[in-house]
Length: 182
Image (cartoon, rainbow, N blue to C red; front, side, top):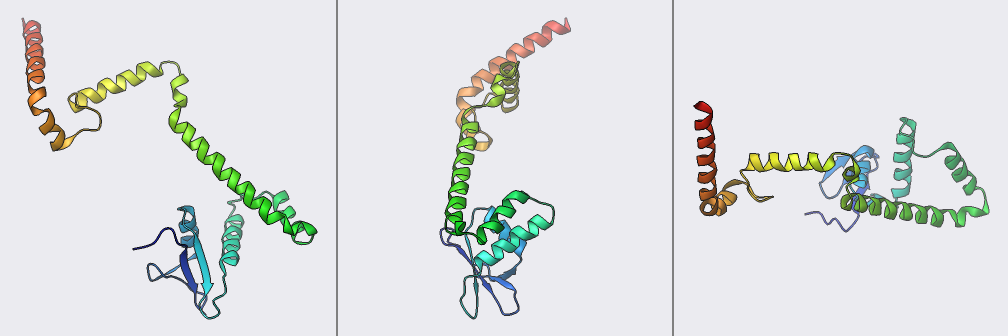
């Protein structure tokens, strides 16, 4: 079983093929990008020398995405990055970029949290009426079962207490039908 806390170890063979040590199969750069998007840390090492090649391959993934038109980095940012390699700023740039991305991740997660707590649609005119209609529809479809309950467990729990209510509703509906038929 994979340990999600440790970085996924990818070994690069002399043939330049990349080998996933967890699943014992070969992977592509796109596979590695997928692992990273899923939140997994990745470490890529050369099998013979043991050199850490992670940075090189991550840059290659970024370059491939940028060349496919999936541009994330504006030209002025790329230009500034190139400039930073030729100036004294190289000592500050990595820390600045790391701090910037950390702040971005924090603000993004806070935004997602706040969206879960406050429904932006609640301010929309008629939202309460629409919500009431949805609740009525769900009650009708689930037979007034409590929220989150369905299937045999719900039926067993509700059998005794709801049977009388169902009989009364059925009798009321039957009486209405009888009146309509007359």
